[in-house]
Length: 115
Ligand SMILES: [Zn+2]
Image 1 (tube, helix red, strand yellow):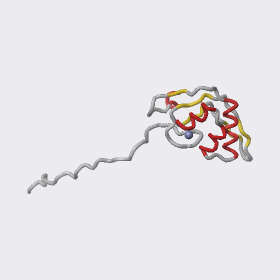
Image 2: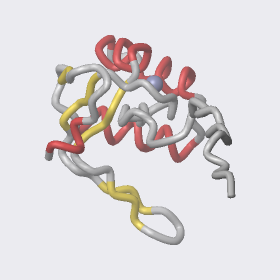
Image 3: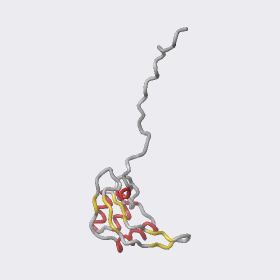
Image 4: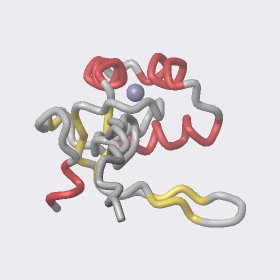
């Protein structure tokens, strides 16, 4: 009885686009991926109709939002990020509670993972 060991294995197919995405944080202002810095923030709270929103103690920022924060251009930041009334309140709270001076971190890393 002949062994059918001449049956080729199927070609291995490279797999792209599957698996965990690089752990790059999203900008907390405009929600775009690719934050490069964060700002330390004293936690603040915003009362919403159904719950109280807590800011947490870091706000991540993409290059554009970081420049707007550094410039103190709050209307520009709200406009760039396309924020509504609630988002504008968050920016106001951030303005009043953050520590000036962006904290940079290694590109491609997510500082939350080393806390
Ligand atoms: Zn941004």
